[in-house]
Amino acid sequence: MQFGDYRVEIVPDTEFRLDGGAMFGVVPRNLWSKVCPPDDHNRIRMNMNCVFIEAGSERILIETGIGEKFSDKQTLMYGITRERPLADSLRAIAGVGPEAITIVINTHLHFDHAGGNTALDGDGKLTPAFPNARYFVSRAEFEHGEQPTERDRASYLPENWQPVKENGQLELKAADYEVVPGLRMETHAGHNRTMQCWRLEQDGRTIFGFADLVPMRAHVSFPWIMGYDLYPVETLAAKKTLLPRAAHEGWLCLFYHDPDMPLCRLAEDNGKLRAFDYR
Image 1 (tube, helix red, strand yellow):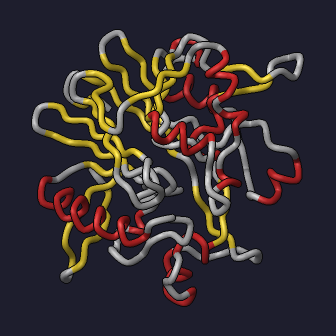
Image 2 (image 1 turned 60 degrees about the vertical axis):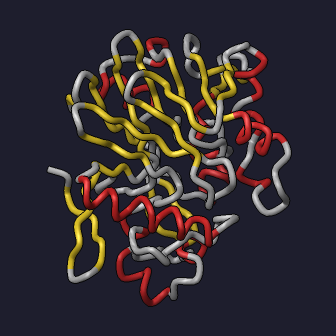
Image 3 (image 1 turned 120 degrees about the vertical axis):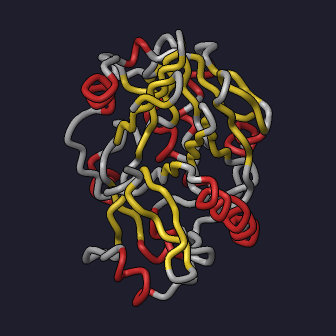
């Protein structure tokens, strides 16, 4: 998709599954199960929709998915149904391989957003999966990832960033910063204190990547908030600020974990915000 001066492509990683109750917090099962039917283990279908942006000489990848380093037991636990490596999807959709990526951005360092940062080489050694890229993450998020709380420790796997740091490819950024002209990262607390969302503005148009603030279309309703969020009241406040503006200004909205329609527009329908196909 051409978006102003930039080319934007959605590059799905792989379907996986997480517990539906955890994904919808206090929302009753008889409500969320109507829009996200669970399997026999109460898990719902999700994906990880990474985004490729070609901006002049920069080839940018926002998020790297879940990676391919999990054991068979972990693969089964998360219901991972990988059809092809992320590198192959990148080549097929964006027309470039991992070696062509110049910037990798992580909105935060949870394993399902940064798992593809690193890979195992032929000798079983962990190496950066994008050998020529600068990896960007906010300093505050990096520091939190290095010393997570007991509640979110399981989501932070140092193997996803330590090899990048040791190789001199990791760059720690401010809470809000510009990647290239028109592409900005901005911190929105809720999922944790330091997660960032991304905003691309070109010719008066906006694409906004909600990361885990609004992970799927099903989470557009204000009180539908993940049980994983450390600060759900702050998630609610951010949603009430961003989502009405997205609808009013006609933003394209990228919902990272939506398995079927990750890129949407929002509109009011019978007094409620709903997501619709962006075309």
